[in-house]
Amino acid sequence: MARAQGKHLMMLPMHLNGAELDVADRKIIWKDGSRLTTAQTAKPIHEITGADLLAITNHGIGWLEMGYIPQGLNEKQMEAFEAEIENWITEHEKWKTKAGHST
Image 1 (cartoon, rainbow, N blue to C red):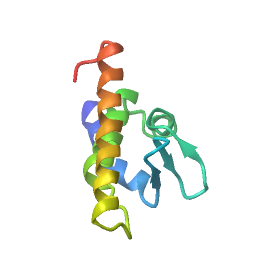
Image 2 (tube, helix red, strand yellow):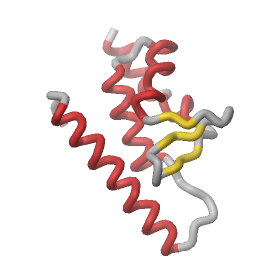
Image 3 (spheres, helix red, strand yellow):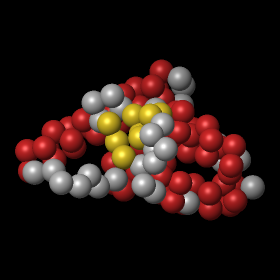
């Protein structure tokens, strides 16, 4: 079971393929125009894969940090974008701690 969940989590970037970000509003914008939080994004992926919601959310945060590369930003815009991603990650870590999840 854990092995199957791990396989599904490794496929998370595929699920997010084509998505964009609104870092100011902390939303993932899907191809269909849906604007979802990381937690809202995790729910349909959980329904498809059966993987743990927290694990999906954590992998989604990892995608924000390492897998998503915005296009067309100059150096100053990229620095601002990266600062917003860091704030998003910090907010997620605070939520996990508050909810009693280990970091």
